[in-house]
Image (cartoon, rainbow, N blue to C red; front, side, top):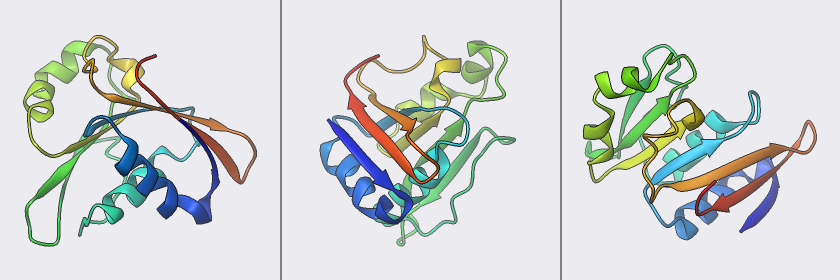
Length: 139
């Protein structure tokens, strides 16, 4: 499934992902500057999140809650990881076994740890203002 969108269509794209995803674990494959964090921000908002979304680049993981204070999900940024052991050391497996949503930026840094049932989301930069998003079953 493919979508071409611009920033003013993020809400629509977020809803398409929510309604068409085969999993609550979303793995975002995209180059730097493609808008992964911006899209995750829209997803958290559409899912009823109350938190401000930012990239967890330095902390590696952010936790988000819904308006009732319940767990909505976790947002990972694996860009700075040196190896998969670092993800295991931070307890990735425990996070993946929760009922919340899991948003993974730079999953290519942990190829053997991305769950087989994760929804693969590929984002390509078409121009400064447009992106192509593809929902894949696997890479």
